[in-house]
Length: 219
Image (cartoon, rainbow, N blue to C red; front, side, top):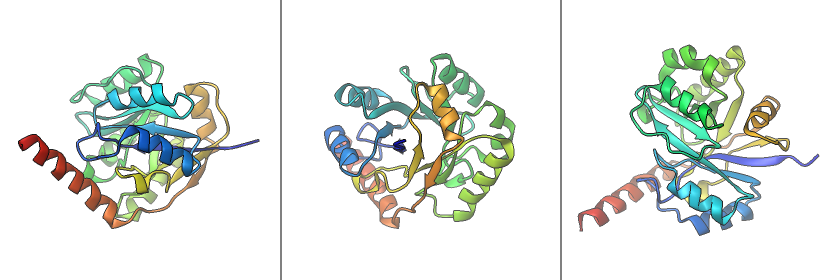
């Protein structure tokens, strides 16, 4: 059986800290052997919807939604989750439209993770937990998230959190083919995680992208 290589956390120019263009992203994803690519821009799905029209066989429409408790990675959605909702309400809105969700970099306080208390409190409501984020500079935080996911019986995913083309696909989640978002979650329980940390320059790249976007807006 052919397994699918997935990039489940990726940003584009529709995020304020990325300059990645959709056609280039799609081309790059195919070139590096990805079978599915989730576009998860910050509190935005416009780019993901456009990319899905361009490559429906490749793109999963997603969003990295900002909740009151921290960031929530949403997949297989078709309606934007507005920022500023309580975490439980955001989860319910994702599920109401047939999507799935889980916390991104949950134990990273510098990047709006939901934190340990909320991770434990809301674990029964998550479809997955991001247990490896390639941009997280403290490996212990990834390891702790993985331990908690295992103890709580929630599937883990491994992502690049790519903001630049060079990062796309450096970390992957590898699963069997699936037939629905719910079957996707079932497949995650037997997933192979392929972790690889990004260069520190990746974080520099997103900061530069944010600066470029800000300067253009000021002109």
